[in-house]
Image (cartoon, rainbow, N blue to C red; front, side, top):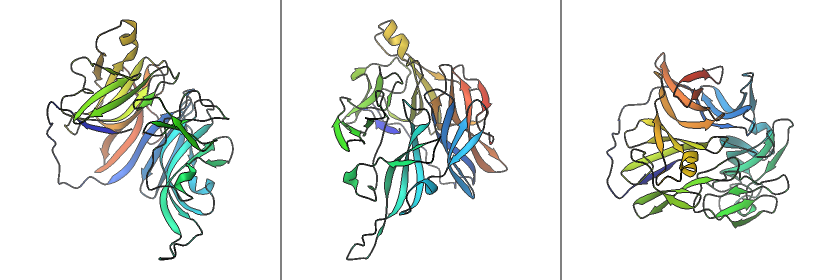
Length: 329
């Protein structure tokens, strides 16, 4: 989830380039790793194709999930926006899509019956099956925009729960909302014990850990003190570390580590954090996801024959680039 905030104590300067971006050769983004650490879902964009991919992290075998084939016939187009893995079934995932739907009910004034919107679908990797999880209040075409997730710990096949980006949790099987109890929620730990969020009061921002405002050790960017943007956040499987990609107003992405485990174990007054120095000649992207307690997937990009080539790589917490995670790396 991307969050941009301006803190009270100052404004950072932004440099805006008027140059055209380089042509795109490949972009792999928004990685999400299954709870068992065996599979990674990601979106791929490239000339002449793209879509939702699933790579087996043990074998490197990549498969495509074709949402246009799985969705009903009246859904004329389904383009994935992001993926959420199910916390209790490693073959199940939610795919949030931008769609074009033929409702079969023309608007009298215009005769229009095809509408753009967003929809959420649950599908399985081990069978061709699909369930629409979009709240019914949004109608058959879905809303112009809505948030779905995280997919919360404690969900079951009978009762799933998804944070809706506000103060509620949506339960698809009942098609109703319940109060969430979260001050805000960016990411929940895999065991459900902790969560991080943010809170904004006017022009001042605060980091939230388990519903409480926390101070962050000096030098860490997620605290009041100028412009900052956090694009992507991920908990380690043990729940002891959070990684985030951060732009501190320079236009350059950095990877920062929040040491949640040490904060609780030592009852520290401030949350310790540090910037990871990723040892590569490639450019750090905005998207990352933990694979294990010691490694994570991240988007790294380079120029090949004058075109931008952004792929997904495995990196250690010491900053060492270990391997490409897809054949295109």
